[in-house]
Length: 114
Image (tube, rainbow, N blue to C red):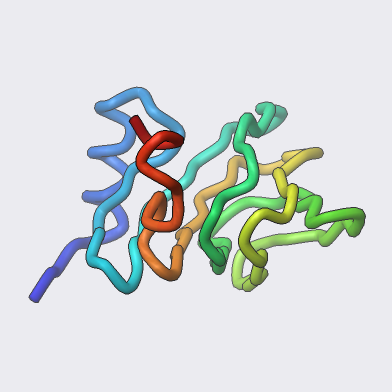
Protein backbone atom coordinates (compact mmCIF):
# COMPACT_ATOMS: atom_id res chain seq x y z
CA UNK A 1 0.00 0.00 0.00
CA UNK A 2 1.07 3.57 -0.67
CA UNK A 3 -0.24 6.66 1.13
CA UNK A 4 0.67 10.30 0.48
CA UNK A 5 -0.93 13.70 0.79
CA UNK A 6 -0.95 16.17 -2.05
CA UNK A 7 0.78 18.72 0.19
CA UNK A 8 3.63 16.28 0.91
CA UNK A 9 4.04 15.44 -2.77
CA UNK A 10 4.04 19.13 -3.70
CA UNK A 11 6.68 19.83 -1.07
CA UNK A 12 8.91 17.01 -2.36
CA UNK A 13 8.48 18.30 -5.91
CA UNK A 14 9.44 21.83 -4.85
CA UNK A 15 12.54 20.54 -3.05
CA UNK A 16 13.83 18.95 -6.25
CA UNK A 17 13.26 22.07 -8.33
CA UNK A 18 11.68 19.91 -11.05
CA UNK A 19 8.27 20.69 -12.55
CA UNK A 20 7.19 17.03 -12.26
CA UNK A 21 7.51 14.65 -9.33
CA UNK A 22 6.61 11.00 -9.81
CA UNK A 23 5.17 9.48 -6.63
CA UNK A 24 4.02 6.09 -7.94
CA UNK A 25 5.61 3.74 -10.47
CA UNK A 26 4.40 0.18 -11.02
CA UNK A 27 4.37 -1.70 -14.35
CA UNK A 28 0.70 -0.99 -15.13
CA UNK A 29 0.75 2.73 -14.32
CA UNK A 30 2.65 5.64 -12.88
CA UNK A 31 1.49 8.90 -11.33
CA UNK A 32 3.02 12.24 -10.56
CA UNK A 33 2.38 15.84 -9.72
CA UNK A 34 3.08 18.47 -12.38
CA UNK A 35 3.15 22.12 -11.30
CA UNK A 36 3.56 25.20 -13.47
CA UNK A 37 3.60 28.83 -12.33
CA UNK A 38 1.37 31.52 -13.76
CA UNK A 39 2.74 32.51 -17.17
CA UNK A 40 5.20 29.58 -17.29
CA UNK A 41 6.10 27.71 -20.47
CA UNK A 42 5.34 23.99 -20.53
CA UNK A 43 8.40 22.16 -21.93
CA UNK A 44 6.91 18.68 -22.18
CA UNK A 45 7.10 16.49 -25.28
CA UNK A 46 4.70 13.72 -26.36
CA UNK A 47 4.87 10.55 -24.29
CA UNK A 48 4.81 6.94 -25.42
CA UNK A 49 2.06 6.12 -22.91
CA UNK A 50 -1.55 7.26 -22.52
CA UNK A 51 -2.06 10.01 -19.94
CA UNK A 52 -4.90 11.27 -17.81
CA UNK A 53 -4.61 14.78 -16.37
CA UNK A 54 -6.61 15.85 -13.31
CA UNK A 55 -6.32 19.58 -12.61
CA UNK A 56 -6.23 20.08 -8.85
CA UNK A 57 -5.78 23.86 -8.96
CA UNK A 58 -5.16 26.63 -11.45
CA UNK A 59 -6.38 27.74 -14.84
CA UNK A 60 -4.85 27.37 -18.31
CA UNK A 61 -5.40 26.02 -21.79
CA UNK A 62 -4.20 22.55 -22.77
CA UNK A 63 -3.29 21.98 -26.40
CA UNK A 64 -4.07 18.36 -27.34
CA UNK A 65 -3.19 17.65 -30.95
CA UNK A 66 -4.79 20.57 -32.81
CA UNK A 67 -7.45 21.28 -30.16
CA UNK A 68 -7.26 23.81 -27.31
CA UNK A 69 -9.04 22.70 -24.15
CA UNK A 70 -9.64 25.22 -21.34
CA UNK A 71 -8.83 23.61 -17.97
CA UNK A 72 -9.41 24.58 -14.34
CA UNK A 73 -9.70 22.82 -10.99
CA UNK A 74 -11.71 19.65 -11.50
CA UNK A 75 -10.91 19.22 -15.21
CA UNK A 76 -10.05 15.72 -16.46
CA UNK A 77 -8.36 15.39 -19.84
CA UNK A 78 -7.25 12.18 -21.55
CA UNK A 79 -4.25 12.43 -23.91
CA UNK A 80 -3.48 9.39 -26.09
CA UNK A 81 0.11 8.20 -26.43
CA UNK A 82 2.34 10.13 -28.86
CA UNK A 83 -0.10 13.06 -29.27
CA UNK A 84 1.50 16.51 -29.01
CA UNK A 85 0.21 18.34 -25.94
CA UNK A 86 1.20 21.17 -23.61
CA UNK A 87 -0.30 23.69 -21.25
CA UNK A 88 -0.28 27.35 -22.32
CA UNK A 89 -1.90 30.63 -21.34
CA UNK A 90 -1.47 29.71 -17.67
CA UNK A 91 -3.44 32.42 -15.86
CA UNK A 92 -3.41 30.74 -12.42
CA UNK A 93 -0.62 28.48 -11.13
CA UNK A 94 -1.34 24.88 -12.14
CA UNK A 95 -1.22 21.81 -9.94
CA UNK A 96 -2.00 18.72 -12.01
CA UNK A 97 -2.07 15.04 -11.13
CA UNK A 98 -0.80 13.01 -14.08
CA UNK A 99 -1.54 9.30 -14.52
CA UNK A 100 0.32 7.25 -17.15
CA UNK A 101 -0.81 3.83 -18.34
CA UNK A 102 1.21 1.75 -18.63
CA UNK A 103 3.93 3.33 -16.47
CA UNK A 104 5.79 6.30 -17.96
CA UNK A 105 8.73 5.31 -20.17
CA UNK A 106 7.67 1.64 -20.20
CA UNK A 107 6.88 1.80 -23.92
CA UNK A 108 10.20 3.33 -25.00
CA UNK A 109 12.86 1.14 -26.54
CA UNK A 110 16.08 0.53 -24.58
CA UNK A 111 17.91 2.83 -27.01
CA UNK A 112 15.51 5.74 -26.41
CA UNK A 113 15.81 5.49 -22.63
CA UNK A 114 19.55 4.80 -22.45
